[in-house]
Length: 309
Image (cartoon, rainbow, N blue to C red; front, side, top):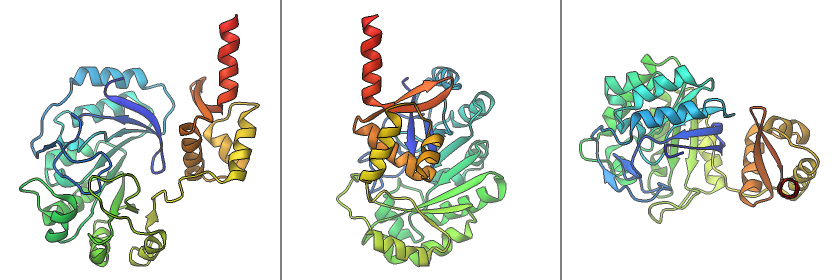
């Protein structure tokens, strides 16, 4: 697959099949915290970046695979693609899973972009600043983008969109944490269904620092009702790792079964399976249209047995 990737295990969206409509790192912001590095093409111009029919064919081919969301995100700002509306509309007709769009909110000032994005089921916009000075410092936008207009765009989108809005606020130490009160008031005024607080965990584009877990917990007093979504502790507790690996040594399990067997929340089960998979201890398989996990040893044994036959 050239334009679809995954499915990946996501703490926000569960099992997410990604769709990338862009050339790598094409964006209208050059955020200092971006895990993809510096923006290679900084532009506000909407263009066609990939062959639309080829992308739609990949969506068609993946439509029966198990995933919780088909997510338009990828390697930059998806609303820069002129094909976003057609791709989302096609996905809604073709895929049974809900469709999500992750956006930096910048082009929600456009009525046309709002209409295209509103075809999704869930939209995940971001808001990192409430003042022009901090906006310039953290998001390093392309010329012409103004935070006041972006905030109004999010508010207008809320009035027009009947689906769910999960607003992400990325907090960076010494950059925007000092105006958290102002960001919180603005975020609340956009009336999202969820406010999700994040901080720098993966390697950022610039050498900026995260807020500590204790500092993020204090942010919940400023953002009442918000959720914390960073992964500070990227490990599986030894007892849970042992139990999961033991259960997968004798049978295949879905994520739902892993949750039930080990009394885990969906978020924790996703995190632990992601770590164990990255460490090569478990593998994934699709059985009768369902994503299942099993121990790597069992999969290796099956491969050897098949080779001998």
